[in-house]
Length: 112
Length: 112
Image (cartoon, rainbow over all chains, first blue to last red; front, side):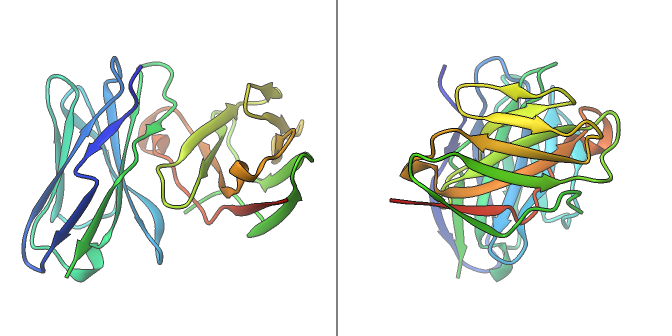
């Protein structure tokens, strides 16, 4: 089976812009979670989607949003980018009942 | 907040067993112990998980103490490619505690 894929892998944006990141889960997985990793804060949970519904949300401002499509693919959006949003954004998927999360390679976002 | 305590760093000689400890003294009865590792800014890789019994797979063994307050991840024959940050995580499989809460982890360096 193919693993979790994330696009793009690298991205450079400027402050005030918005960005959309994409995640394709492992085939058959219906839950997708997003995490942000920075040197200062480590790996932090953003949100989780299951069957197109947000099931869980971390402590991030409303500028961070996401959605899930009927094929379980997910996107996250960050509006009005700030320098502090520079990070590795990771997506993880899991299968119903098994719940083990498998991570993609991440999207590295640099905000200038 | 992370509910686990791990040493910040450990060294291990190549070919020897690497034993990584983790304290989780406040673990609840319905919480599992998960181990992930992250190799230099790649996505975290799932290693193993368990509830109360010892577990073994092709990558590692997980030993959980009888009172479940601590555990040890064992890599039986460490190689240079096992150099990574290892995260011990406790999580429930339902509710708001479903997400993975990463701490600082243990930086394992395998020495030639």
